[in-house]
Amino acid sequence: MEKRKTLNAEKRKAIANVFQQHFEQNSKFNELHKKAIATYNTLREQAKVKMEVIVRGHQPQDDVDTIRQMRMKYNDNGGQLHHDNCFYVQNEQGREELDYNDNPKMVFDDLYIKFKESQDFLTSYYRDELNSKGLDADYKVKLSGNYDKRNPSYYNMESQISEYLGFSSSNNVSRNQTMNYKNSWENDFKLWVIGRSYCNERMFTVDNETFEWFRAFKVARDNVKLTHEQLFQHLNKKMEKLKLGLKSYKYFDQAKKLADNLGVVLNESILNESSSMALSIYNPDNLADLLTDEVEQTKEEKIAIAKKLLAEQQASLN
Picture 1 (cartoon, one colour):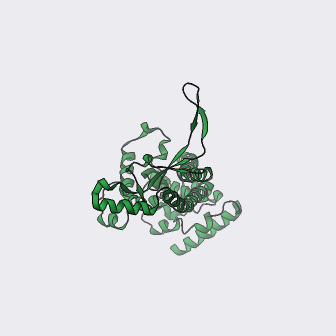
Picture 2 (cartoon, rainbow, N blue to C red):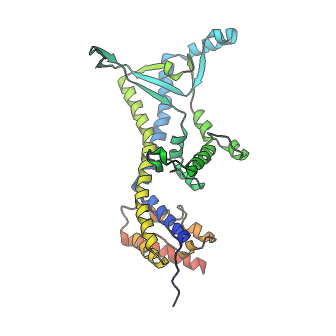
Picture 3 (tube, rainbow, N blue to C red):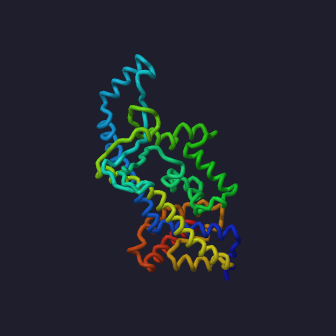
């Protein structure tokens, strides 16, 4: 009779990683996050076109060219031009409010539209890539807004991601030369504008329909971070329960039974940290067919597919 394989902390961690990968790939929140990114990408391209029309409508190219010529002759005395990626749009349709003295006044809403991005946003946007590089893109959302929980590991991950995205310097010269996401986003879209360098001093008036479109654009941007947070919270709740269960398991076959019930491919080779086969078995790309459709596949179908994949992997090891 074959001896039952026992579990320790490291083996439980390896098993938990397999379950987390499965949970994530099957999560509707994972799909929502990807859709949020795709929607933002589409609206961002449209926003570039709309913003150029707005700015050139207020500041015609002929005026920009004139000031450029004046600057060549008179330097700063010839006027001010800035190549900018941030803008304010103001709704031409006002709304009435009461001031401090209860007197009616007209208020005109405005929006800050920027095409450069913060580290927080890009961490959500590039979540999958960061995680694939061994970085923890969830390092900040884990705090749930409680910054008292920040510890050395938090600051270490913040620093590593900052370096990866280009917000801080790096000793990795080849990495800096091939890609700097911060600079790439900052230089993705810029327009020559007349006036000082402060974005809020250039308020471009737009009609109500255009204003509401840009409001929706900002919501689409915010949804990238929001769906990232929702995805983490969803996974975190599942993993907390799973880890509690794994702590009570002494043997691998107990975890294997749980995996079979959930349609998770769990191979004993995952217990061998030196097994490159184990790493390839649980790669998301290799399990795409299994993990892409949680709605249409029944539990029995998932288990059947899981058993088939496991049999194939076992055969390849023999």
